[in-house]
Image (cartoon, rainbow, N blue to C red):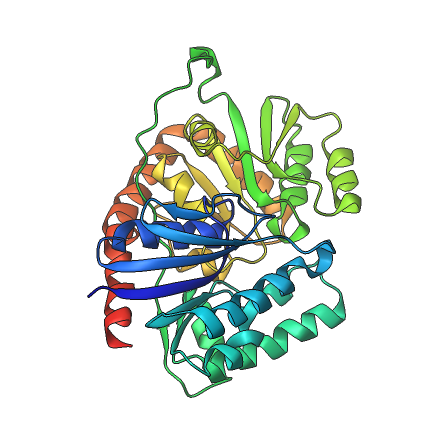
Length: 363
């Protein structure tokens, strides 16, 4: 009989965020070998019941928005404890680690770290303390711990003697056709920044400052939810003055997003912190040239033969790298093809899923 696995932490499929994208692709690759049950919340999805490859339990969202995610983890954990007939549980994200002692009353748990949420600026000091405590619970109570970030494993080694298993994020290669309404002259006609949530650590302000420095007057697109932090949104709008910038908002249509990625002249990825960015992998899957910050998480994925790195949090250096990239389009295209080749060999979901499969069998 096939093993039955409950997944907590994705919050809902189809995927909107990076973590949910990881879970969605993992299910897609292993759906013929395991029975997956996904715990979800109505703020993220309305697709309850049987879906292709999994069964989804959707709880009604909590009326107080700030408590919605906490409520999601608590009700998921107690549902699993009381009604679940699972062989084990796969918990994604440190956010929900506080329910691990509950889950461990009945189940073994594989837990996957997708980064340190306390690094996000929008959280106050009490929330960041909560995440730090969660991190300790995460490491102590999980039977098996994995991380999508190689540099983060070095940090965890200072907190625990437990072996942390590195399994990077993956990508499925897209078969994208140009949108019918796209004009040929618009292809490769813009610089692009994209993120699900546009918050300071994603570095969009740094990108705009660099463009101001070089007096860039051609088309620039910024894709993502810019309403996460109203004060930061106002800063971005101020920095975008005198530039030819269009804010598209968050794109939920995956194929539309991938078309924008494919048709960009250059993608700029100035994050201050990442675990392992799905967005970066998606851009490379479109063979689009990339300039990205030299943070350890990016350096662990690609080399300077494949992308152009700039000094993190340095608008002047980013400006210089943008000028160089625009003057050396052929070399940038060569780098993009090399990055794509590495992506195919190391970061495809067909390969990544096998690593999770081994852990599923072991537990």
